[in-house]
Each structure stands twice: as structure tokens, then as C-alpha cells.
Length: 360
Ligand code: PMP
Image (cartoon, rainbow, N blue to C red):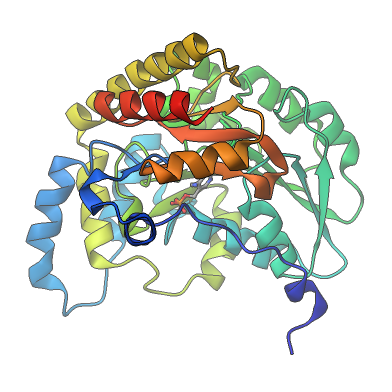
């Protein structure tokens, strides 16, 4: 019954649920290690947990976004009217597609870019223009050249998931200067907080970038370093006019009370953020060293995950599952010789490396 453009969409395959694997393999739930969805292995921010417990008493009321929007605006040094909240940052990607795309229009993104860009594009009947990757990352020159008169959105994930590739601020800045101002550029920074400050460069100047490029939308999430993936909350920053357009499609109460309270508290949980950052840095080193010892290559990693090369990844993945180890196969990205593993606790990373070696 659905129109052809909906039937043509390949569904998003989420990481295998722990309970499903436990049942299938007859392994106790607590023995399963899930390093498949780029979640924070430390759990949620401690301040956020306390805020959720306090907020439970207020659940009879509809949510009020004021405090969180204010906190985010202050964090980035911009006016509150340039901030919009989403039910996860995926929600915001959907608003962008619904506002700026439609039948007869197109969006540009890189091969191996985050899987939600084609979903959002095709969901509104627009065309996906997929640009071949360079070293698994975005080829910005080719993406610029791919923009057509009917292109309204370019999606860039920096760092990118699932490849972990990273574009220096200078390259993104030059791209923004080259792109026509009637094309929205979405800079998806879901993993930004994991970048060492030295790598981020002048992209730290969010305010300056947004002032210079009114067609720029930056998206961020509380799902990664803040440890709130299950609460579903993300945000976008942009020109007031652009945020106003996105707000017209936003359901009034799109982020729930618990998520709002948790995210507001997590924003200020500097200790937890620093701890998460450090754990991730050490975890990447541990996993990369382990892969090297086993003799497997990897794509240089800039998020909270490592994407590595392994022949016949689907079979290796099956053998990992049998050992209770959930990582992410990348068949839906047409990467049949790679697997993506999320950084876990030190003990989980070690278990992963042992299981991987046994699976080869
Ligand atoms: N962008 C990228 C690049 C991601 O990897 C993810 C999470 N998988 C998201 C956006 C969406 O995250 P969320 O909806 O949980 O905010």
C-alpha cells in the first residue's frame, strides 16, 4: 500500500539485543558483552541519575524544555533561539529532511556515511546522491562537485560512524565556504566530545561558524559521552531562522521530562565527562594494540569505536556471537570485510580481543 519510495527503504539494523542473544545461545544475560552500539560503558552520568530520581515526582506534568535549551545555549555561547532539542539526534536529522527535502530534491552524503542520512532522505521521497569515499572517509571535493541545482542538504558526520574517519576543521571550513548558501550543511558531531582538543582546531568556535554560515546545522547527542542513549535526547544548533523552521515540525513535547532533567545535569557533570573521555582513549589504545598483535588492520579511530578489517566478517561475527560477544557487522554499509567494535571497560575489551582471536 505504501508508495514506492517507502518500499525502497532498507530498514536500519540495530545492534543485536542482549536478551535475544542470551536466549538464542543459552548464555546467561550477565555473561553477554555488547560492544555494538557505541554506548558509554560507564553507564550514565552520576549527576544525571540523581536528576532522574528527583524528576520522577514530576511525571504528571508535560515537559518544559527551557532549562536544557538555556544550558546548551550557554555552553556554546549562542542565543537560545538557535538551539532545538530532538528525541535523540536522529529525530533532528528527520526534521531536516522533512523541512528541506521532498520529491524532486536531493541530498548529498558520502559512501559509508551514517545510515540514517539515506533513511531520512528517502523517507520524504528525495533522492540520495552517494559520493564515493576516500580512504573510507568523506571526499569533500567530490561531495562539493556532486551538488546539483536540486540539492538542498549535504550530510557530513565528523567523526563519521561507522568508519571513525575524521575531517580537520580547516577542511570542513573550506567546504562550507565553497557550498552555495541555499544548501543546508548538516555537521553531525555525535562523537565530537571524544576528539582530543588539539584535533578539533577552530571548530571549537561554534558561535563563529554559525555566524559565518547561516546554512550550517550542527547536531550533537547525549547518547555517547554523556551516557544517555536510552533516554533519547540530542540537539541542533543553527541560524535562528533555520531553527524556527525545524521547530514548526517538532512535536511540542518531543523530549520527555526524565531525558530533559538528565541531560541538563549531565551537561555539567565534568568529572564524568573527563572519566568517560579518558576511559575511551585508553580503550582505543588497548583495542588497537590487540588488533595489531592479532595481525588485523583498522581504520584510524576517532570516536568511541574501532572499525577493523577482517576477511569474511559475517562468519567471524557469528563465532563472536556464539561466545556471547556482540559487535557490529557492517553488511548494511556494504563493508563485508569489516567489523565495528565499541570501546568497553578494560575487561570487556580484553574479552573481546580473546574472543576475536578464537574466532579467526
Ligand atoms: N549521528 C551519528 C553519526 C551516530 O553514530 C549516531 C548514533 N548511532 C547518531 C547520529 C544518533 O544518535 P542519537 O539519535 O542516539 O542521538
